[in-house]
Length: 595
Image: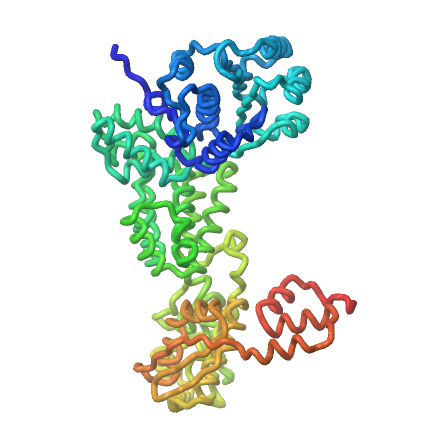
């Protein structure tokens, strides 16, 4: 057997400057030492493995160091420092409150406080996991903690500050330790690899840092295990296999399939993931985190929240540009619903697959263009004929309209998805006295219907299609309003209604007054342009979206108005932001009081 020492012990900091990710604590303690404002009781609290006990030991060592440096770091060479490192110091006492939590153990500690230090100025008492002390032990410790001898200093450490009596908290200087960031853990792992001569993939170290969840000690324990598994190497594949983590490439492929509405490929990919031994709930949690990362990448302001390497970060940004925000929010909601109800589902695989199927058709449910044909009800399939002999007696046309898959569990979808109204007419048709043509029938179906009526001896119906409207400003406004009316999402309509349209040749300029309105129009730009190009028969139509700030005089005028009552305030808010009106009506809040 070799004398192997785990990295958590071998690379445990011995100076304040070596502590990772807790500079705010180290600097404060060093400043207190420099100015002589050293408290008699400290409480170090924070998550596990972030350096609480380590900082307590460094502070205890520097207090009695005989050769303190100018930056108030222990020398680690004097008699006091060496005695502490060899666990032979009489001036520093450590107590594990988890195993010594009785009142008798506390009384024994108080007895040691009475004796002055034999060497050095202070006696330091470090009590780890102090929240484990019993109530009687806390009460026995109160008086000594409040008025200790001038040579006694107490350093308490805990992971659960809320379990400590308030009377103890009020007698201590409290230092809150933070979770260590992924970047800080990553840099420390790179340093250890350099010192130990270990070859490591940067992506592998990044996964270890993320898996540690802010605890450096956990990261070092995982690191040692991966080094042993990879035979003195830390490889990406080995880390994925040993930590049971699904490669992020699978999640990129899943989202690509969702955006392409490739249900068959998505189910096959999910089956491949299951055959690799991953549970459906683990996969869904990973997918939810992936969707969250994509949503974070939609805005430059939140991009810093993405904890990923440069290469992976760029890949996230590229896929985020392809995924609409409404799609990501709804998919994230479906993933959350799947996770909440996973434990109660009897067929776990089917439960997860159902969530994936709903995600596949999100874009059709959220934003459906007027060119997608609806076939949900029989009356929309059969034209209405005013002659005595109805075409319902005849066989239906051989070519049926495209049927969009129904999502039965509407409650699992995002709250913004509402029932779909009847599609608005796409073509301007002149109604014949003997035949009224429904808007969902294409020209090909009209010809097919005419042949069918003629074959049964009926008077041939004349269907006249009006000419394509001329591209003018007035007709553009009419077409724009027609597109708004067929939208299902009420929250989108106000932004489109507020847009001011300008036309120059075949270029349309939509002027809006806010960043969110511009973002909304950009997400709707493709279906809008498809609608307008077909409406006017102009394939060269283009549109640009411009932000124009509101007139400042309006706001100045509002400031001169007399104080408003609650109803006037609500009315003014609805004028400034129509979304407030939509939300108010949906919640059926009624009118507020006039006061």
